[in-house]
Image (cartoon, rainbow, N blue to C red; front, side):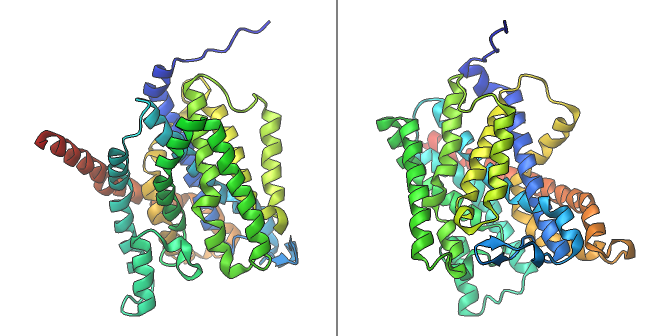
Length: 383
């Protein structure tokens, strides 16, 4: 007969440094996955196989060695993991007092996200060939400043190819007060089901309506906050159950491996690829829950990952334009000319970006958060 598992109290979960460190470990895993995806894409000139009809075609691989490193192409799964973590952390914070102070929520989100984002946007423009004197260049700039660049195909990946997810994140923040009211009225479980219904139905309708996965429309359609609301809400649902000492998913490693296999296989056929992102979110939620419920102290590797997770937002903001810059420098070494050799040098590039990111975190991100807090305290004192 097995002893009942230890279940920390809600207060212990909210205040546990171990819990916060585990969140940073998850963030580190997510950013490492995303970095490896983009390093892989730089090394081979592409990070995916082309479509042939409704299926991915392995014959379109740019080199024989491409398939040996192909698992790195699934680094995009770091993005749904970030969405799940975001929903988890923001909802857990609101649950502390069982109320959502909307003004304070948006104030904190602004200072946490926006000033570092604008700085990174200017950095990306400096490293790009964007001409801000043209109407298109100005449109790209303003769409990014207003965080609406995911609504047009010619804006979505301009300036910095990863910024689309930050636009979606900001739009999901705008939806959070509505999600909070849905939770209060019907419960978080019903709210999750409604967002799942929107996501599934919307994808099915869009896939048929937009001329069978029209490539020009694929970006704005599949990065719609309505379609990705479920992914973020899944993290919120996970937080609510976690703080109550209840699990969402069965304790079954085989089930997690099966879920991962489903995600991987779903990407090879267009009819299932439209669901791949949210399927990945489910897998990430399963893995995150299993990890957060562990009671062991952090291993040495996990302790090394914590500071990477701490600066993961700064890393995400600046890494994309830095990958080709660093890759070009490393490729000057004769032994690193081939794509496989360049991939094996990824730790060098990662270390360089991490160092820059940590400095960015200290100088920009952390100071922006502190400024927001100071201004908030000043406002309250002046009342």
